[in-house]
Length: 409
Image (cartoon, rainbow, N blue to C red; front, side, top):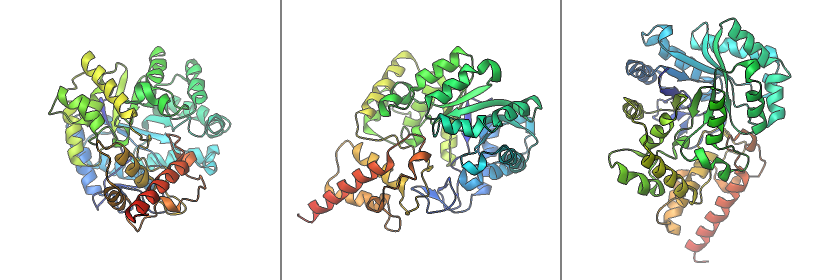
C-alpha cells in the first residue's frame, strides 16, 4: 500500500469546487451541489496510479452518496487491473433506519456494485465513537453487524477489517480489548502534529493522537491517518505556523510539513489526503516521492507551531460539512471558517474589514449566524464535538457589535 492515500470525500465538481457531503439543503463554504467532474476525476485517478498512489478511501455517505460510484468509474477506466489498487470503504450506517442487519447487508452490496468490484480490500466500521458507546452498540453490536463483517472477511468478500474512530473513548477501548477475538487488520484515526499532543486540550472528550497511536502500536495494529491537514487548516497560510516552519525550509509549503510529520511515524500504513485539485495531488505526490522523515529539530518546530496555533482563539472546525444541511439554511462551515480566519490573523482586521470578510465568506443568499435557532440538530453530526449553536451565537454577537461600531452607536 502506498504511504500516500486518496480520500474520496471532496470530489471535484464541474464548477471548480468540491462536492457537498450530505443530501439536501444548500452546501457549505467551498462545497457545491453541481455534478461531479467525472472526466477530471478519471484523469486524477490515472495520474495517481501512474505515480504509485494505490490506496483509495471512500464511503457510501460521501459526496451526496456519489463517491463510491464516481470512484468506481475512475478506477475501472484507469486501465489498471483490480489487483493493482486498494479500495477501502465503510459501513456508514449512521441513521437509525440503517441499523438493522438487513440494511447493513444492502449497504455493503450497493458498495460492491458502485465500486464495480466483487470484494473490498479494507472495510471499516465508520466512526465508531461518534454519538457515544450506546450508538456504537446499536450500529454494530446489538444487530450482529460486527460478527457479520468478521464472516465477510472469512469469506474473502472483504480482505481486511478495521474501524475509524472519532469521539467516545469507551468504543475505542472496547475494540482494542477484543483485538484477540476480532483481529483488527488496521485502524483509521485523526492524526496530525496538532492533535498529536493537544486534541484533549481542544476538547476534553477528545483523545490525543499520540495516545491512540501508542495503543495501536502496542497491539501492532497498522494505522491509517485521516485529517493530516486538519481539514486544510494546516495547509492554509497562518502566521502562527509560518513563523515556526518557514525559516526551516523556505521552499516547503505548510501542507508538506504536516504530511511529513504523519509519514515519519513508524507503523503508519497510509496517510489519507482529500485532494480535490490536481495541483494538490501533484504537490502531495512530490512530498512522498520519496518522503523525507522529520528529524528531531523539525519535530520540535512542529510542536512549537502547534502550541502557537492553540494560542489563537480558534475552534477545531475541519470544514468536513457533516453538519450540513442546516434545517434553517445556515452556511455553518462558512461561518466557522470565517471565525477561525479572523481570530488567527496576525493583525486583527478593522470593523469594516471584518464585515467585508464576512460578506465574502458567507454571501447574502446563504443564511448567516443571526438565523441560528439553537435547535442543535447539527451537534451530533460533528466529529469534533463543537458546540456549534454556541459558536454561532458568538459570531452573531461579535458581528452585531461591529455593525454598531460602524454605525457610530
